[in-house]
Length: 339
Image 1 (cartoon, one colour):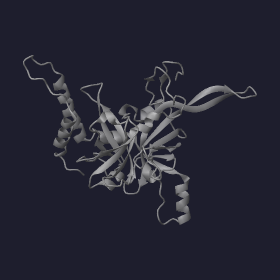
Image 2: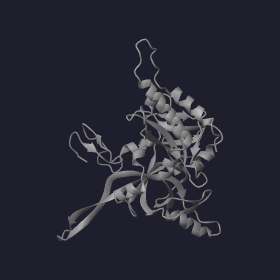
Image 3: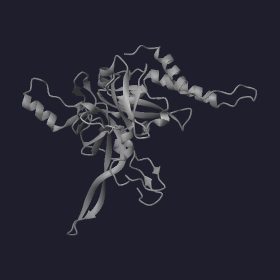
Image 4: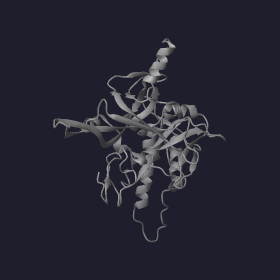
């Protein structure tokens, strides 16, 4: 990245973010935008009791390349703790205060073919007065895949970080996510046993998971190597964290030992800090649930129709609104009952 006026910041997903003047966090390892992609989820009750983390992702619109569709993502086991009943999402406003987003009649979608073994849940994100929310979305274009990990040389030992809820303290006047850092410990070459999900595909990472982090986004960044010299003049390779941040996946939780093990061994297992991350490709597959695909298709068609030229005598076309979004959602949702 450049540190001069008119700098280009490539920390966030490797995308070019251009600034007239360098932002205050230009020298920080983690860009502040990642703190804005998460929210905290609770039952809709007088006193919120936050159970986990949700995060915002976006898919590009086929009808309007400059636009897209936002969705909320969390762990399936978190969504099931909320269901049945309405829920609220705690997020920050641009004025620095807290905002509570009520779910209304929103519902969750799970993986279309592997819902019993994939700990992912998705719903749409179209809040009223969206301009008031201090929110960033994670573009699907930076979801890690086998090919992108290979392209940037990501592998065992590379740095990971997760952003989410620390239940002991999450802010008073505004929500404050916590960032936890670790390392990639095992690739998903074989399925691993998950409590409540059978054998599932997942990464193992060295980085303790706590209750509120369930459903959090987990990012990975590549390691870069540069030539250097020791004080004695010996040529060596220097390793450092790269600027290519990708979404590795979603935090499922920590590794549990079966109850047949001794209590001391159970405590040691938790203290070892091995956590399970559901791969980003499973999130992408859930986002392409047939109902969600159909819903976005119908909205794209409405967008195309609204952009068609009309005769002067014709009535002006109404812009596609949040009400249209929710109407389409309800229309599509009635086709198949929630699982």
